[in-house]
Image 1 (cartoon, rainbow, N blue to C red):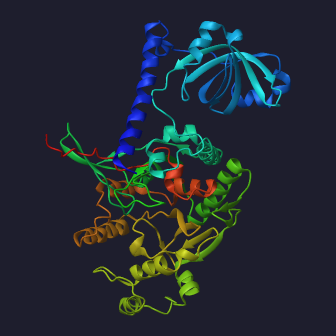
Image 2 (tube, rainbow, N blue to C red; image 1 turned 120 degrees about the vertical axis):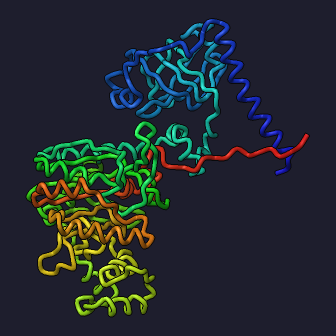
Image 3 (cartoon, one colour; image 1 turned 90 degrees about the vertical axis):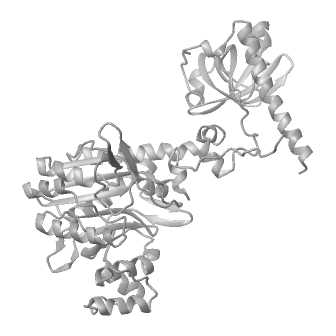
Length: 504
C-alpha cells in the first residue's frame, strides 16, 4: 500500500470520527444531549423476548442496547440491537415514532446505545422483532466498531480493548460466564463443607509461601519496601494456628516472572487449609472440587480440550514422582541413592547442573523434563523431594521425600498441595537452606519469616493445604488456548507512541 493510500484511509477515518462528533454537537445544541440521561427503565432483555415470544407477542416491552446493524428503507428502518443476553431486531417507522424522532433516528450510528419501547411481533420473514413506538438515544458512540464481517481478529488488540472484543465477538462472553459459574461452584463446594472464606494481606514485608520472584513496591509513610504476595499460604496457616479449622481464600497472586499462554504475572488462585487432615484428604477434596466446577458450569465432567477428550471424573490417577520417572524415562531413583550417582544420571540426560544440585533436585528436574508431557488425563504426582518442598511434611517411610502432590491435567500443573510441615525446628532448618540458595543467586528461594516460625512454635495442628490455579482450570473448561482468553484484562505491554523525528 502506498503512502498516498495510507494517508487517504487515515483521512477518511478521521473524517468519519469527526462526523460523529458533529452529530453529537447538533444534538446538544438542540437540547437533546444523550449524556445528560441518567436512567432508562427496561422491562426485558432480548433473549427474554425471544424465549417468551408466544406469551409476549402483541405486548409492549422496553429494551436497551447497542445498535449493531442498520438497514434503511426510506421512512422505515430495521436495526439490530445487542444487549447483555444477545441481539434482537427492531422495526422503526417514521409514522410510528413521529417525524422529529425519526429525523434524529436516521442520524444514529452503529455503536450508539439506544432505548426502545415497542410491540413484540413477527415479521413477514418470520423473525421475532419489536416494532418501535419510541426510540431514545442514551449514549452517542464517538468511535467506530470493527467492520461487521471481519470483526476484531487481532489477538493483541482484542486483549487491549476487551470492551470492543466483547461487543463485536459476543461468544467471548461465554468463557467468562463459565468462569463465573465454575468459581461460584467451587466456593459453594467449600462453603457446604464448613470452610470459612477469609481475606489476607496482598502487601507484605516478606514474600513467602512459594518459590517465585515477587513484585516490589515502596510504602512511603513507613519508608519500607514491600512485596505483592506470591501466595497467601503463610497467613492462612497462621489462622489455623489461631483456631480456625477450615479456611480458604480466592484472590489475585502476583509473580514477577515470564509470560506465556499459561502464565500471567497477575493471576487468580485459591488456597484451602483443613486442620486435622492430611494430603490424602486434600487429594480427594481437589478431584471432587474440580469435577464440581466442571459439572456446575458445563453440565458434565468430560471435556474436550483442543481435540483431546479429558475425563475429570474422580478418582484421578495417583503416581509418585519417582514412579513417574521410572514409567516414562525408565530410570529408577529407588536404586540411585547418592548425590553423586544422581548428578551423573542428570549429566547423561543433559539436565542442567546447578551449585546446589543433589539427588532431590535431580529427581525434580528429571520429572519436569521427561514426565510432565505425558500427563494428559488428571493425575496426582505425589512424594516430591524435600529440597523442592520447603513447607511440606516429610514422608515417614522416606524422610528424603514429602507428603505432597501436584495435580496435572493436559500436561499442566493445576494444583499443589501437601501435609503441612508443623515441626518448627525442621521448618527453620529448611528456611535456612532456602537462604543459602538465595545467597547462591536463586532469587525465587524463600525468605526467612520469623513471625511465621513463631506461629508454628505456638502450635500448628496437623493440617492439609491446597492451592489451585483457577485460570488454568478455566482454560480447560472453556477450551481456551491462552490464559489471556480467560482473564478479562490480561497484562499487556503498553503501546509506545511513535516519535516524530522529522525536523522542521
